[in-house]
Image (cartoon, rainbow, N blue to C red; front, side, top):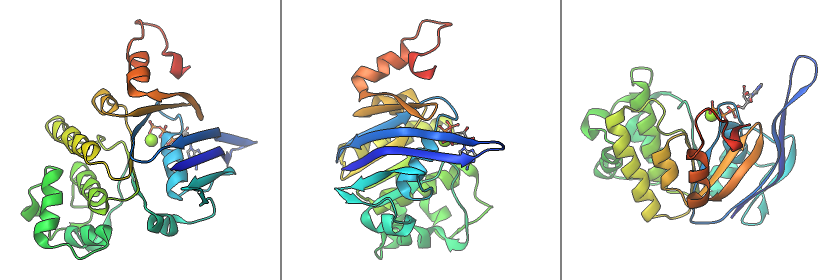
Amino acid sequence: MLELKNISFEVEAEKDTKGILKDISLKLDDNKFIAITGPNGGGKSTLAKVIAGIEKPTSGRILLDGEDITDLGITQRAKLGISYAFQQPVRFKGVTVLDLLRLAAGRRISVMGACEYLSEVGLCARDYINREVNASLSGGELKRIEIATIIARGTKLSVFDEPEAGIDLWSFQNLIKVFEKLHEEIHGSIMIISHQERILKIADEIVVIAAGRIAGHGSGAKILPELLNQPEGENCKFYQ
Ligand SMILES: Nc1ncnc2c1ncn2[C@@H]1O[C@H](COP(=O)(O)OP(=O)(O)OP(=O)(O)O)[C@@H](O)[C@H]1O
Ligand SMILES: [Mg+2]
């Protein structure tokens, strides 16, 4: 179980400090599919980075299975089973797609095995397996390769930041299937940051983050209708 206790994250602004995350407390149970949503700039990516160890909270504690991991870096957290897919994935010059999948899996997966992960995210594996993860890959290709690496890792907690970003409509249908499958076979928890109704629909729990705070948290069945059934012209109650 991942537990966030009174997490705040502040940055130095011109005159004073700016609160990006404000006193967030959240318990995420094991083997759950959790969607995080909310308005642009609300703090979702920052929260994901704080969980992955990319940003350090200004105050508050993070516990993984009761162990305090607040002071651990990205690598140590990755070893404990937290993996993170960026909203804008990173390119790795000189590393092939096959290398990256093997690195992610942490074991010597066969070329066939690697190809299966690529096929799952809709890439024709033989075209990609020996390509370098560099600027020659399109945004959508890179995003899918990153999703394949997270699936290959199959860790305790996988965090995906807007996996749908930059993915074309046709591939989006397949991406939904990938996540549905992950949901069915769930080993460990999956946290997906998304604005897409179809992704929110398959979540066990939805957390709404707005203006750095938790504006709503509950079962998908409870939160989704509240997010969707807003009379026209009225602000969503979560988004004020
Ligand atoms: N290091 C930083 N310095 C200054 N401002 C920051 C920093 N990191 C994040 N912010 C600001 O904090 C707010 C939250 O950013 P964040 O990326 O977490 O939003 P988000 O909810 O992921 O938004 P989106 O839906 O657009 O991806 C934004 O206003 C952003 O500009
Ligand atoms: Mg974001």
